[in-house]
Length: 470
Ligand code: UD1
Ligand code: CA
Image (cartoon, rainbow, N blue to C red; front, top):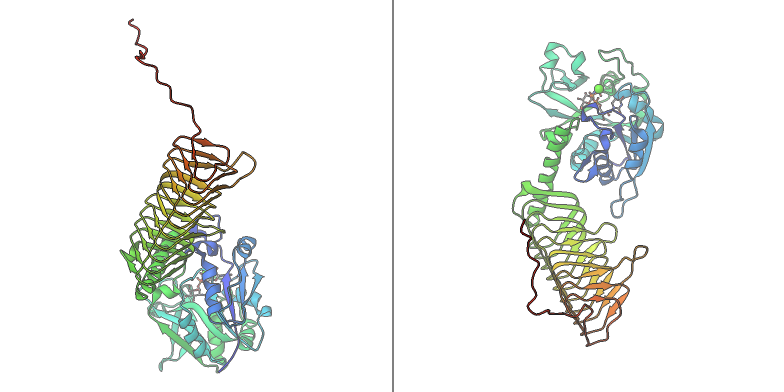
């Protein structure tokens, strides 16, 4: 069985209960917009296209979403937008998308505010549709209030979906609900959309009315009934957003643990992007990972670290309370390096093997070669630091002259004492030593001791001023 899939994502609704200026489907879950989860899921199904229906905040929504990355070897999924203004119901929404849907495919209807549907669930629904049936994703709910109910005939065949507000007392007792997700042959869908009306309790065009048309036309209606409510849960409020965030994070944590990653507490991990872990990785509590982070074999991350867009190589240890943010330039930490506690690595920090970065040390756009150490209270910005350099406590590179940034080069085996200011551009020659408290404005020769500070003066028997008697 082979047919093309075109996905419709409904995202025109207002989301009043979020009480936010931001359109609902742009609120973030796991670091990605809610609707982006849905779009990315469509790509995992190798869909031909995704048509997002926008209305409230349409421009913002369209600017805030992006086409999914194509799966390896698969054709790219095209991303299109159609506007629905005003919003006259889910059937009216899909009517707006109809011209963008080729007749030969199957349309998969999803909602932009339902982010955690698994692609294998949707694949099972598409298999049930098989290019010729109407397939509905349904769920049993102990409290089905508010949802459309699945009405079945004596033998169990699905007859209709009846909305809460249109349902009889007996129908309201039905606990099988429609999830809002269906797969339907597009040619049939278009015929049914043309027949919708708004003669119902809400005066809306209900997409769910296609079920009774299918039954009337003798088209088989199938329900794929699941029991995992998280997969069809929508976000309507900050509370629901937070609940789904935790469900998502637990899913990520479980995936990592199945691959062998040791988490001190799966309930205290937040991955807002992609986290790739090698073997024997250990992550303590309350760590946040953003963007793309790679942790090599044997890496240990202490409690309360925030790590974004970084590659941490094998055996490195990130001590507690360390903040690493590579942004666009990235950060790399070499094998066996020790970072933190309380260290800050900014974009372009590249640490070689066995580098040590200690507490309250900030590194930005700087390369540190193997074995270099900056252990306490220091700043390295726009610097190239050679092998085995020891950079003293309280020392800084003065890399910014108020207009331009300049580089500092510290060659191999240099020893920079405490509390030095290296005024860039400047080069410290290999093997040299800089005396504590020096302000270095000129390059230093290799092997030299360089001291640049006021000479010490001692005034013998110095009398301190005395407080006047009143
Ligand atoms: C709909 C279903 C109901 C199902 C429920 C599952 C209909 C008539 N009813 O309920 O059977 O149990 O979903 O959550 O389809 N939207 C638009 N344009 C509109 C109206 C809605 O884009 O004119 C979007 C919303 O932004 C949302 C989705 O469609 O993403 C569902 O709308 P919502 O109002 O939440 O669903 P209901 O109509 O209450
Ligand atoms: Ca509604």
